[in-house]
Image 1 (cartoon, helix red, strand yellow):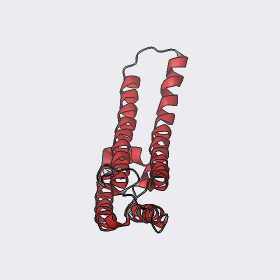
Image 2: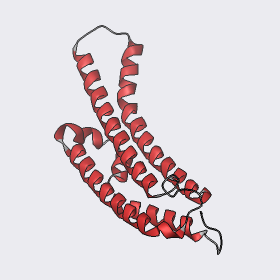
Image 3: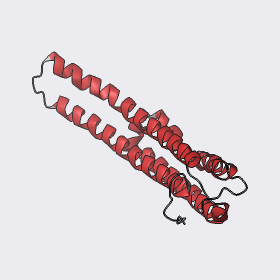
Amino acid sequence: MRSILKDKRGNALGIIFVIVFVFIIAIIALLTTALSKKFSAEFKKLDIPVNSTADQAINRMDTMAPKIADELVFFLFIGLNIGLIVSAVKTRFSVAVIFIFLILLIFAVVIAAGLTNLYTEFAGVSVMSVYSGQMPLTGFIFNRFTPLIICILSGLTMLIMYGKQTGGNTAF
């Protein structure tokens, strides 16, 4: 007999993990972008003689860093959600745990709303607002509709998990 608590693939805890992990990566990407821009600006103020290749590399890093960080967060979010849905397809669940799943989904939506507000405030600080404006995909992920996206993802996961149940085919 399998334990319900040992089988964590494709469930509400995975949805919570996705939103928290992507939030942490988004904050790290925003900080890294801001610090790299500040570092290169201070480096240019030093008047150290550099050749044109080094100067081009610094300028290219300044223009590419926000785009790379932004796309990293976006594709990580998409990839983790696809992995969560595939995991829900491949894992067998019992209908008896739907109440626990619903409670955890409400918890996931509350966490998503809190992290959305936290990211919005963090990105809205005057120092970070310049750099967060250069990361539109991350802003799209952590906009006011993030709790709705988590609700839709949770509903889709729940439909997949419990929709594939047949008469005598349960997880136990």
